[in-house]
Length: 302
Image (tube, rainbow, N blue to C red):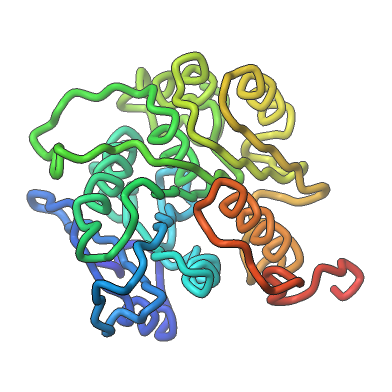
């Protein structure tokens, strides 16, 4: 149930009630997992043959594989709905929502979410070749692992929609958990499965990763994944034959992209994401000369 994915207020619950819910994983003895889709036409509207196939963006909330709120990316999702995309807020397993969960199971959820979305292409009227994943923290790790395509998993009997590709066409990564070291705060989530820490460390995936375009945005004052570690990863990615774009947000911590935490950085990151998607033909050019001007570009306003 959605309530398992972070404490929500009435307004947030009302927002999810407006979405189209698709259950993408059914779990024995545990809460099923849903994607909450928002469409430009409105979820109650009929889709006819004249409706264009839309790009789709799947959002994976910020977590350390321990807890998180599925509505966190609602402001970004609603912006991109206005820009013509179908946007899905993805529930994935954490220790809070599913006590037996592991980071590898969260990664499997990411793969299943992409497959399920493509399997509903006709129902959602989306273009299955324009699937972007966007995440933060562990959600960014999930998005990166699915896009880079280097983590191999054996079937576990719950490989729904296995006729569809689970590799996204692009990724946007915010405050990413890049490499899981024994000294890191997040390593405790791997205490029962220490071997998975290496498998889900992004630096180990670079040499065999896909060439799908990736945008990474990181705060220079992020104390969870420090800037030096992010820069080391960037250097490896820039040597790979594929599009990779990196932006460092000076003086920002790991929460810079949240509207309620840092409206200036929220807007700036939203514009970067918008331009990235336009440049790779996932979105049409915006005819608004001010871009995503939801607040103000001017730092001094705050």
